[in-house]
Length: 478
Image (cartoon, rainbow, N blue to C red; front, side, top):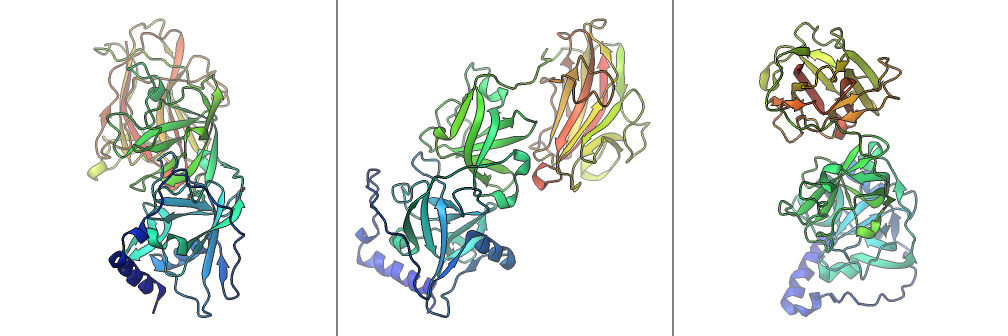
């Protein structure tokens, strides 16, 4: 009889005999006893997380480990990198294959709460795989009990049969990554993001206080807050459970390093970072890296004197944008702003301007489309308007930026000082991809001097950062 069938019979027998046999000691002060080093039996087989992930990739669907023909057991080892002490994890253990420079991680689903009193951070554990199944859930590979095509948690009554503690408690060194280096094979690893901060919209709010981690009225199940890199424009979501002990703490307004587990959001749309506790945040730099802002808000009406405009109708479809004073520059990758026309559900407006890294294969995509100079001192009531649409923008980014010191050369773009015009609305990934959205009448009256305005695109060929944007009907008037 297969092990999994034996276990199912035992579960029912245990439930009929007594409920007490399934009760775990939930006392957070349960002492952790000294353990002996785990040793394999003569017929036992040791495997690693990479092998388990590789077998799942080969199978392509949920599969169950059977008893080896030699009568032994198959054991998987790993180091615990999650902790439910702060309430941000629930009935799951995340393990990785090494205390430092890890290469693979996986989630083990266990119907036990709390878990940190038994499997503390850094503890080496061994998982007996006989009868357990491997499947993908919400984009993350996990281990548990099979129920049809679903994965369920290892029952609490069988926790000790499948999970063994080793005597080793290792010091876990986070793997330092940048957001651009996120890939599926880095999921379930304990990582460090260096020199990041929470975006200014979340720490300098109209309410006069930073947002909490997950304690806002709009937070349901999880609070999602945006971390941005000070070394570039990359962002990632920090996800915090609304059941966590620290949900009502305010976000730090400073910048620094944060350690957490790389995973996916519930719908498997994008990468997220999950921390064990606020102690994983070391924002020790008081100086934020916010960009310069030209923030005059929105104007009540456009001016009547046109200073610059373009609807791209004179451009050649599927060719780079040229003429009319534009500077079209590729800073990284191979993608530039191009003329585009299309019908269907995501129709362009005649000829539009398009930018996107979809299937480019570029590790990084940065492109600029810069206007001719605009003299705001001579035009004190200037405004800018435009429209944008997206074809699933994902985590790519389109920004409206400005500079008062760009020298007009492509070589000078990277050395110039560029700020952001935050009042301009640019379509978001949550917007319907077939619609066009107005920027609003963006007031430029608080600016002065001779400025250039630019649309800056940041993305890459990675599937989660390869979004596409369209721009049309740009008009600067006074």
